[in-house]
Amino acid sequence: MAIINNSSTDPNKILPMTYLWARQHYKDGVANNWTPEEVSMQKDVEQWKSHNVINDSERRMILWNLGFFSTAESLTANNIVLAVYRHITNPECRQYLLRQAYEEAIHTDTFIYCCDTLGLDPEEIYTMYNTVPSIKEKDDFVVELTKSIFDPTFEPNGIDNIRKFIHDLIGYYIIMEGIFFYAGFAMILALKRQNKMVGIGEQFEYIMRDESLHLAFGCDLINTIKKENPEIWTQEFQDEIIALIKRSVELEKKYAHDACPQGLLGINAEQFCDYVEYIADRRLLRIDLQMVYKKENPFPWMSQSTDLSKEKNFFETRVTEYQTSGNLEWD
Image 1 (spheres, rainbow, N blue to C red):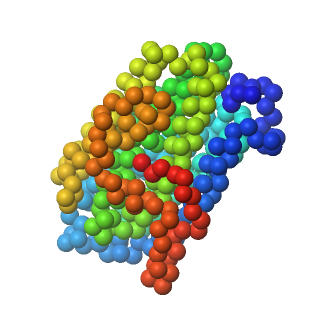
Image 2 (spheres, rainbow, N blue to C red):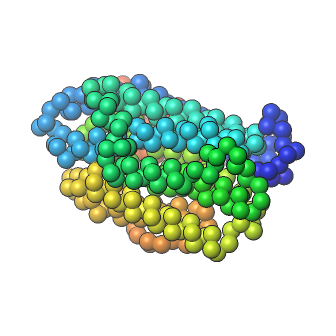
Image 3 (cartoon, one colour):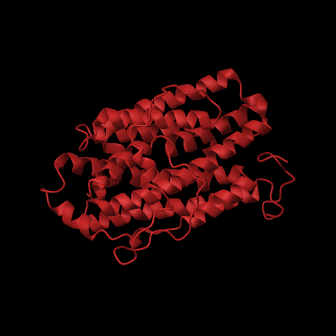
């Protein structure tokens, strides 16, 4: 049995399952089900209108993050639907990919909801991937990294093409979803800790939970292909992947300084950069590569911000947890 290049696999026959980890990721995704309209943004609107609450630096940071994520979610959805799904014919993996595609649609809807609710100019937000250099560089980098699987003639056959497929999956899952999202997550959740723009912060918590599952699935997918095709995982290829991840870290650090040059209360821009390096080491270890940066986590509260077991007083706020999934790693 093989997860790719298996002509005997019937994608319509999901039982019996071969890759039970894919089924578990699907169930964990269902357990975290949510929609943006469930989150009240009334206080966010009041704070956004008051320059006494949200200063210019914080306003810039919020806009930069909405600008990056609003188009990044569409980019990731296109990767799944138009490229990855076609090449992964295993039915339980496809079931998870469909779940992930739905979650990307929810994330896209989240930024529509935020823009509409705050009365933002959609032309400004949705063109930042072209008008803001640090956002454009990240998006261009990922598009370049994942172009092989968008080639309609590409098939993951043979050592070279399987290696290209892994290269693109790493570009998509490890770099885009596993590194390029995390400085933004930290910024918005740091603001939420100050009781500012809490509605947006809560939605980012949900998005981060989803992305953590996407990352977990992607790593399991990559590691399974590696295990089934060990000849692709040469030292030269490993060095190439490490170089790509190091480049992505530099781009994310540049974005962190650009989006939040003055930092936030008690946090400077360098701490966001340290967090990116810490995250990158976690991603490297997850696909059996050596750490590069060896930084401590400057934001241990990031895990607490996305703790699925947290409880809320029903009479003070809405219930945000329908089910629990205790086996996830948030950063």
